[in-house]
Length: 243
Image (tube, rainbow, N blue to C red; front, side, top):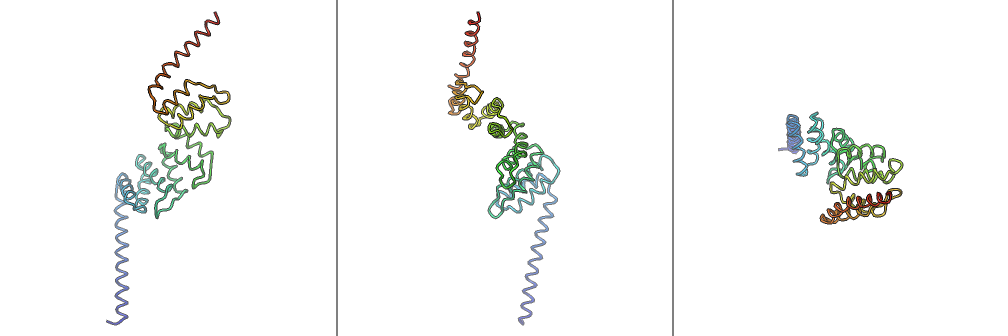
């Protein structure tokens, strides 16, 4: 066999392999198109777990664009997180992360709204935007998401929304703390210990939240019982002065 014939055969072999590869990829893509949105979502998750990020991206995009709210919102959130965090060989993309997290947030996923709010607040891969940060954190907090309640309280205390209203700050911290947020418990223990501006100190509440923070439920319960008794005693003392 001449060298020319060998070269021709090699070219044909390479071309054949390329054609087979293209057909295989096309077959996989065609197969994916016929999966249900729920199956697309599961395929995306499986590929994520196996480190096949490009395949995961393709499946999650199909699921996110499926129009089935429950599936599409979940897929959009997971896709947004993939773009936000990035993976080895799969670089983060802030613009795409924000796009899909917003889709999930508007579909009612509080964690998507929370993540997006933090991105805008920190200027994390997106242009810092306090207005958008507050909007999405409010949306997350409305659902009772613990971390969002605490974050909104912090932002309010920092003056993100104008004049600081400590009653609102404490109310947000209380809601978050009741759900187990330790940062909120710490903040409440400090605020109640010393007061804040015109917000009065309350040693009993400070002791209560410190006990909760330390996991001392018995002490916390004792404080809860003692508080109304102390309040009643003060009322009686005031009434006796009036008499």
